Length: 301
Image (cartoon, rainbow, N blue to C red; front, side, top):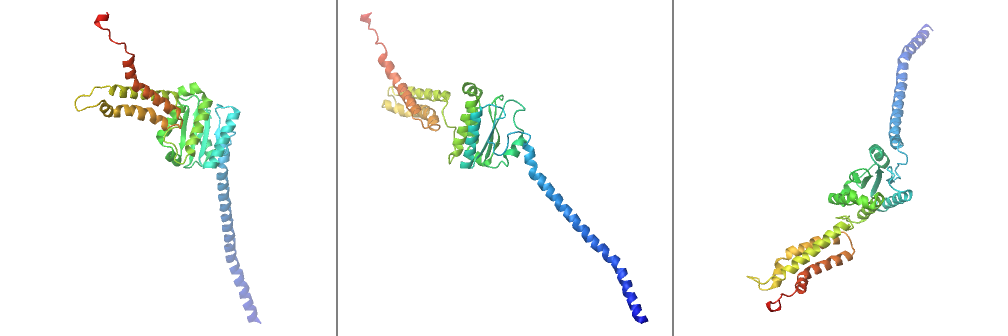
């Protein structure tokens, strides 16, 4: 009996001694699990705030969001034109995949901040282009963002001509800001919608057409006067002079008279007019000789 009691006492002593040692390990595992759970919740909170950051970024600019393709912050267009242009850009984006975004401004401080534009219209990829119109700037048109695919379709010379034609002060004064914005936007969508883009900006301005007509007439005059040269030396016929000077009158008529028109428009009327101008210039030397007064003879004085 005494031996059995001694064994039981030893077992109770052993349990009592080992119990405090096991308790801290259980408490440590529970504390580690709580730290892990707190870390996971913190990570979710950071990700959630990052996901909501764009909304708070462009919330300061009323009316600017991902569905806005034309943001008229400068109030340069009327309400109906503004809505129509926004609808056209939206349908163009869905049909072709090009992301064309446009905003307007009227002086410093009226344009949306760049961070707001990127937050509302981002992410701006290779197929995106942002065009800004500022009515108080020296050039009406500015292109703050140009995607790689857009630049591959429409080269930098095209953009230079685009801004020079529709953004210069003379064009804006003659046509007005609303016409400059709507016409240039339609031209941009037209060229992006073509499979290979455009090498030049479509359309021939009046001043450019007058230059082509002048060069066509000048080419005709050169051809007409050269064809009247008398044969001499190795030149046995007058038409040989015409061939020798063909680089001069051919460049004036074909390169500078017809080239800019053929590459920019499919209208045949300017081509016919320049061709007629070349013919009149070529016939001018002959007409001048026919209309010249005959010399007065000595007996008729």
